[in-house]
Length: 254
Ligand code: MN
Image (cartoon, rainbow, N blue to C red; front, side):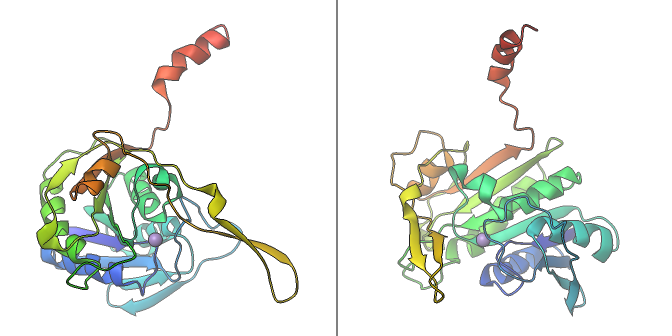
């Protein structure tokens, strides 16, 4: 099995190393094509206004001066010798739960993989201010990653779908299991935009990421994580809201 590993935190991110270790437990044929810099929040963006450059870090290890989507595209078309059987994206340092997903470079890299018709899984490690008792923030991802990926390898993926996995901010031994759940919704505090002045007196704005604590809906990724479980959420690239389609057809007299 040939595996392509990427992320959005960049080639030097500790979470990438964790995912490479997991990938090597599954196969000896592991390739890495990751952004050269941190691309958190890049979503599914593609670099169109400038060239991207490729740097070789090892026999099968490369960085790309672009977004996670660029990294997958270049990885598949320019770097790899043949198509991978599996794309793994992460392990992101931070949650990709609920509506985080549309901002997420980690999930978007897996979307790009799904568009290319390759089985793709995004993996994110929820992090809190405090480290778990072991001191290893990636403890849950490190130990539960292979347990989640293994069964997914023998499960059919529909075309244009992918799977997003989140690990709770716990030590592996504290994790209570794995749950297949739907995408939840959480309110971000848009008030967490900080306004300041740069050294030249120009005003700037800086986005924070503080989530308002809400009671997560039953059966969601947010609830699974809140209850100490690994969340596994299937996602589709078709963003059509099918229930509204008939309403709009009526609206336009179809
Ligand atoms: Mn990230």
